[in-house]
Structures are given as structure tokens and as C-alpha cells.
Length: 143
Image (cartoon, rainbow, N blue to C red; front, side, top):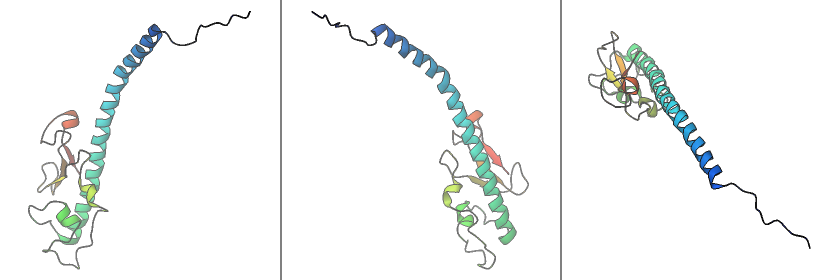
């Protein structure tokens, strides 16, 4: 008679535990590094977007003069303010209103006169959404 082997191929519990531990160690090393990169990418994006908004504000100021006092960016970059002649306004100065929000979902702030620049500043308050901070929470001020 032929005797068939009943031994099955597969992983032992010890092998599975070793693999899980290795995956856990790798995740503990890689995840913090990726998290830092995400924060850096958001800050870089916020700076680039703030520069684009600053260019749009410069264009508005060249066409129409200073923005209305206390105006938010959307009120004069996306729509013509009532105080500006239709002949002067060449907007909208941005493609869409989503450009007026930073990577953390908060609107960019226009500061006139600027603290860093003579005419104005475009500010994002960073991840903490409050003035001040360091790292990912640091304010981004452009141009």
C-alpha cells in the first residue's frame, strides 16, 4: 500500500509572530518620517498658494487701487466690489474660490498694511489655525 503523507505545508505560529513583529518595527520607523513629510508638503503648498494670491492682489491693486477696508480676499478677487467701476475691474483674478483656502481648510488672511511687506501680507496660520507657532503650526506670510 501507498502511504500518503498527511503533513500539510504552512506557517507555524512562531513564523507568523516573527513576521508581524518585523512589520511592526518597519511601520514604527517609516510612519513618523512620512508624517513629517506631509506637514512639510502642506507648508510648501501654502506658501506657493499665498504667492499666487499675492500676485492676484497685486493685479487687482494695479487695476483698481487698494482693496476695500476690511474686505476678505473673495470679496474683491472673485467678484467686483460695488465701490469699483466695472471698467477698471478685470477679474476674477483667480480661477476659483478654492484657491483662497490653505491646505488646512482655512481662508488665507489679507493684512493691510503688511507686517513683513510694505503694502500687504497674505497669511496662513498653519496647522493650528492660530497666529504664531513653530513647525507645522508656524504662520506662512507672503509675498
